[in-house]
Length: 270
Image 1: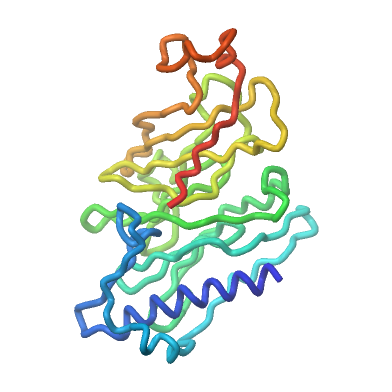
Image 2 (image 1 turned 90 degrees about the horizontal axis):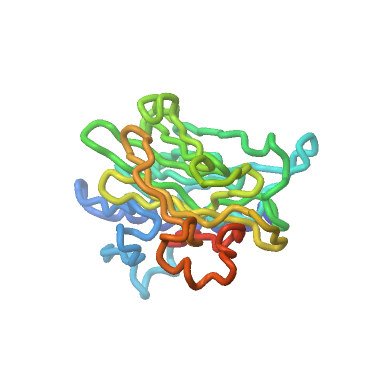
């Protein structure tokens, strides 16, 4: 069932993207460069070729499947497909349930490249009861330098948009750890990423997903972190729970309970 849902949702996005690419006049392609269409996430498209009168006439132009299955050797399984593809320069970019990234030709569906962070190798812990899932990626460019940003579990990856290879100019190796600098130890099994990053100018901003079905003292606090899109340096971090007595609102936490309280995740859902 999960595989069927994944395929169906992806086909819907594929139909829309192919229609936007093919129905317009040459040079007038309407792109979808953000998960929510534009930085404000209005989810609005200016395309005029698809209307209420003809939307029922759309046909499948091509089909691509993630082909992700349960992996017994790791005890993992993919959950439902939840990602929204983006389209830039007639290429679709999307993340799969196992947080792989795929680049597809919007006209033909040809797979141009895939990037696999291999998160399933760490087993199912932290994946949730429905299995692995991910909701999308982000695009950033500066001249000829174009990167796809993927936040997967405890890392933020910078991927060369043309080749699918890690961009080693980012953080000296292509990825940065998201669990450092939290004031308390945080493991990848207590900290997760499922919602796509948000790009603002030259900052890549990510939230956090802290599983909250079981709460203990000194669990990780929720965070919003911003990283330099070029260098990978963390520019700032916002904690959803005060981390010192000087932080705003700390005086409202009785008996200084902010010292050991965790959770209050920030998912940055578009």
